[in-house]
Amino acid sequence: MPSYKYSQKRFFVENLSIENIAKKNITPFYLYSSSQIRDNFSNFVKSFKNINPLVCFSVKSNSNPFILKFLKKLGSGADVVSQGELLKALRAGIKPSKIVFSGVGKSEEELRIAIKKKILLINVESESEALLVNKLSKKMKRKTTIGIRLNPNIYANTHKKISTGKAEDKFGLSKNELLKLCLKISKFKNLKLIALSVHIGSQILSDNPFKKSLNVISDVIKKTKIKFKYIDLGGGFGISYKKNDKKIKLNNYSKLVYKFKKKFNCEIIFEPGRSIIGNAGILVAKVQYLKKAKNKTFAVLDAGMNDFMRPALYDAVHEIVPVIQNNKRTKSIVEFVGPVCETSCKFIKYKNYQKLSENNFVAILNVGAYGSSLSSNYNTRPLISEFLVYKNKFKTIRKRQNLLELIKV
Ligand SMILES: Cc1ncc(COP(=O)(O)O)c(C=O)c1O
Image 1: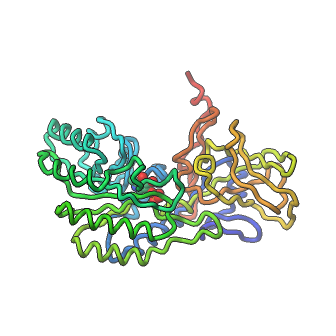
Image 2: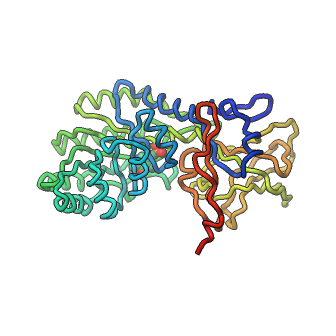
Image 3: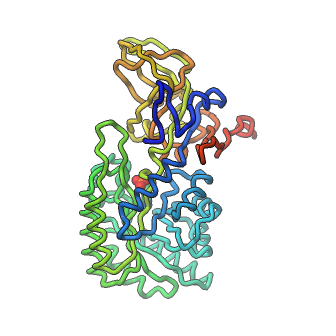
């Protein structure tokens, strides 16, 4: 996270002191660095330079309207999974011709909007969905461009709850089902099948699953005998959450995708989320209470699992760092937990953490992706503020939800 660093024991985002921001605002809050987002986006594009892909940012990873507008300016399209995300992407100024719509359970209303807006692709995931898109398109006198999502039955070597490309996962169609559906679709007058899509999972740290997936796709394309204009290779590129997490190397994969593109003479789409926004965000919280227990001390933060769900949902490990460092160490184990009335409302445990006091500020790292977008009002807690450092200035990009609004009947 090059945009976040210590200077004289104080934690900074770009050129701004996080302590100063925390003193002036209600904690907890999300804080993002626009220069980190820009660097991540341009590094991603650079990794696949020869391929010149259409990059459709995965809106589910972070759907803050200002961040979407910023990504649009960088040239991004959008991968959306709901009507809400589709409308947010359009409002951010992203052209329909750069929007793809994924998901196993798109409703009739969602499909109608997508057809009406003439987005680049509706990636269908079942025969029933293809039939419905055809029926709606006929009523609306449209010929809709669609993709078809393959489930390549690949083990992505990631957490089971974010694996999407194994046969037992609900996503996409098996090779055989896909081949059968391609034949049927060729007879549907109001559909134009122009893409094949895959997405095998998230937080993938090795290029192996991606390479395997590419092989399965090649085989399927040959069998369909269809000339697909686009191959949508999804997202899933992992980031380092823990010190020992090895970063995924995209060079080899990029070379393979380049060969693949040449061979099939197609355009490539990617749908990255985490790799663009994950390390660009932190969550700043306050130590509300320190409480001694049998073999440890609980540091009870004012941020809970409703604000940041990944540890409770996926056992995700996110480092927590002090906003001001000191040289004193505790002997006991420190466990960071939140205030929500659930045992799983806890974050991480450390041995020999620096000595903490109540009211100290800390930062939960790498929370830009699937942080705010997964947050909720659980325990009737308001959604928290989001701030962005943009052009060296601090900007509110979401106001803290008003509690009175929340409790209105
Ligand atoms: C269809 C689809 N595309 C793209 C993504 C983005 O994945 P990631 O954030 O791992 O890049 C997801 C998330 O799981 C997804 O379901």
